[in-house]
Image 1 (cartoon, rainbow, N blue to C red):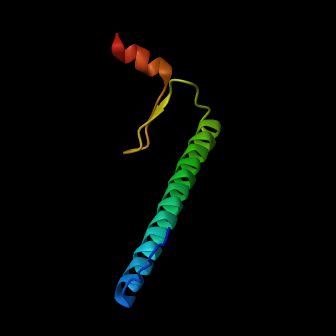
Image 2: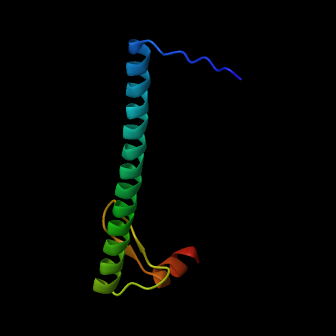
Length: 81
């Protein structure tokens, strides 16, 4: 079987190469964004843990991030009565 091969025009080769590079850069940026998001979540979780230890919070206690108030589990039960 005789195969014929054609060559792409130089401009098309350059465009193909550029497109491949853009794809690789976009994939790398996506990986970076995922890592940054994971780091931000870990920092948030770490802060919640530190605040929980500092203010002796227990399960069910809530911190209002808007004004920094703490609602204790017992206070929440009383409010619902």
